[in-house]
Each structure stands twice: as structure tokens, then as C-alpha cells.
Image (cartoon, rainbow, N blue to C red):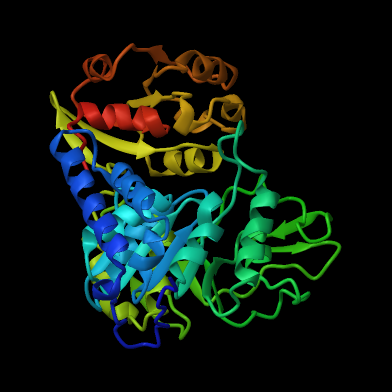
Length: 434
């Protein structure tokens, strides 16, 4: 049956859970119950199993649960979980917000999050970049935020230019969606620009540009429009063969603060480390502004975010203060080195299915910033990491377990940088710290 859509117009969205078909109501109830049982059994937060069962009962459950909510979707290769958490905090100025705060970013996770939240006027959802087009179709979002695109999971992920093309085609089918996009990433700028617009110096309708500072450039040296070289000078970039170039951003990061489109500057005090998270905060404020939230009201809420599904969490273990940092591809490792203190550091690498089986991306990471500190390595593919560190002239010590790493360093700080399943293994040893 047709799904009722309520286009958000600035007032609180009219949530239509009560008008859902009987099958959708049953599916939603089963989803919540399954997720709760999974949590009670200690099998995780239930985000996947709950949504999976709900969608088996009603394949259109995500669309039914989305109807009547004002929704923001946040996607990109890196930073989407943190930006989603910050954006949910900012939008929370207006009222209750449903969100997939534990990072389950495929339709099963979205379904579970909305079913668990019940009737909320707003939702802020992190979306895996491969699923963005599908989730746009199901949720009819008010705004979509495009963070960045870089290489990820080389054995199964699409090429960066191919992903940009899929994003561009999805947005072209929904020209009324408001877009918040990264002006520093040529792939994102091209994806956010309608195909009919050939001059990217002119901001397309419904697009707001932000600049958070992009240090990783190795996936955007070739223009996705014409194949010519991308040139850079300072913050600016431009194609040497067509009009594609960096647009003027309305939101920028400056001196530990954020500048909004009016030129007003806001001091952003975060409990999250690194300049990259100030950039994530700027993106979150830009998303919230699309719902009418003033930065003045939203900024204090950003400082309440202390960790995100274990990311940045700090735990004291046997006299050592352990901080967890997730890094899963070359771009995110570059940012992790910026966030980590100069202290003993444990690196952990796995190559299980969620990580991608190909670890050759390690040779795209410059590990030189780790020279001069005690470096420990562990994980299923620690020997791959050992070869890379040896080539990079970074001394290291192999440890078999996380507990062995804790005992191998003196009391004080221990930084932990790990890719996805390695991160989850260590997080589980710390009682699934959030």
C-alpha cells in the first residue's frame, strides 16, 4: 500500500506511527523485542538482528517508520559515526531525535533505530556510503550530508569515482533534498553538483558547502568530470581541464571554532580529540541549521559528547589510561596520528570480513609520526603491519594480546589505534565501553 509522506516545512513533523499498516506494526514490535533480547543476552546492542527480522516481516518497514519524521542522512568514508552523534545532539535542541548511535549504518540498523526510538519528530542517521541511494529512497530525508570519499576495503569496495557517480545519480533523482557537502573534496563537490550544472563555481540550489580541512588528497588527483589533473594551492583546488573547482564554503573551521554563513564565530569546546572533530562539529552545526537550529543553541550540546560507540573512550586499566581510536583506511590513520598523544601506542590490525581482507592499504599510510615512541603491535595481521613499520623505520614490539600490551607499558597513557574488528575486540575486553 502507498506510504504516507509528510514533507517537513519547518514545523515539527507529524509522526504517523499510529497509521502504519498492521504488518508494519507487528514488524516494528518484533524488531524492538529481538533487539532487546540480543542486548539482554550480551550479544551486542541488537541493532542488526532487530532490523533484519523487522524487514523480513515487512520489507517496507524502514519507509513506514520514516514517514512523518524530519530526517538527516550522514554519509562518507570517514567520520560519519562521530558527525552523526554530534548532529543528533545539535538537532536535539528541537526535540527528541532517533539515531543509530552505535554505528549500524545499513538499512537493518536504520530500521532497528527507528523502531526502538518510537515516535520522534526527528531522526539523524549514519548511512554506509554504498547504501545512500537505497536509504534516500526509503526515508525521503530533509537533508543529506556528504562528508568525504576515499579508498576503503580494497577487496570489495567500489572505486572512489564510481561511488561519487552513484551519489550524484541518487541526488539527481531527488533534486528537492537539501545537501550539506564538503567543499574540500573534489569527489564530493562533483557528486553534490547536478549533472546539468557545468560551472561548479556557482552553488547549486539546495547545496550548502562546509570546509573542515581535508589533509588526505591521494584519492582526488583526477577530475571525475573530465579526467584532467586536479591542481591545489593552499585551500583551493581546481580542475585543469573543466570548470570543476572548490566552491566557496558557507561554514568553515577557524582557530578552534566554527564560522557560520553570517560570519559569526563560535568557540567549540569538545571532549573529542583532534582538529578533525572540530570539522565534524562544523558539519553537524550545518546539518542542524537546515532544521532551523541556531549555532548559539547547538554549540553547548556538542561538548556533552564524550565518546562515540567506543571511539575516543578512555578507560583506566591497571594504572594505565587507555584511549581507543578507530582507524580503518589510510585517510583515517592520518587523522588518528594527529589525535594521539606522544605516548606508548598499540596498533592492532585484523583482516576479517568487516575490515576487508586486503591489507595492502597499509603501504599508503605514513607511520613516520610514530617514531620516537614505544610502539606495540597485535592483531590477526600484525605481521603485515610489522613489515610496513620496518620499511617506515619505526621500531616496534609484538604482543599477543591486549592485556600483554597493557603490562608492557609503564603506568600512564596508552593510545590504542585499531581497525574495525580489532577495535571491537579490544572494546569487548573493556566491557564494550561506549
